[in-house]
Length: 210
Image 1 (cartoon, one colour):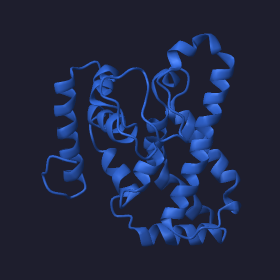
Image 2 (cartoon, rainbow, N blue to C red):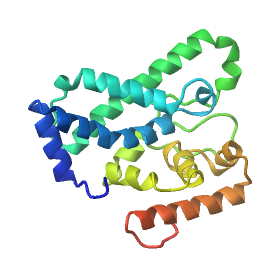
Image 3 (tube, one colour):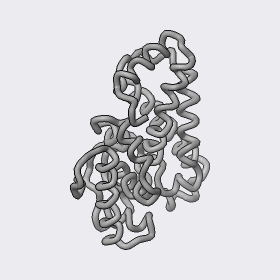
């Protein structure tokens, strides 16, 4: 995937829309890892005990295959945006289902933030995350989503998790520390190292990250 530039993705889209099954399979294969990170960004706290992010990705891939003829875009951005929309709707469906069947556990669900919302999280955190883009929007605004997700996949699990929690779920460092079972200083150091490693994986400089 590292050598897969945007023009190649656009060519796969064109050929798949013309009925080339092999190109269609390649196109979907390229995006599975990307969708995995978007799904992990959406499936938060209480929902993780009920739904695996891979289940959301699988459902999204099945629906995208089924409805591929409805996709009319031509660019990589349009393609990824279409997939993100399907995934976000699937996450929302899972949320409605589990909230409807497990209302007695509502106290465990206060940390959830709907994928369509942009506000900060709840839970009485001492340092709430600043309002900003949703996880899908955060990843989408990066210059090259597929390249970023590809680079993320090369990181260690701890590095992946701290970036997903801090940059995509937009949790405060206090919340990230709680999620990861570490102290806040340890999490901040881990995050800085993870960002540095991500930049190196993408061919960037050894800065301290954003």
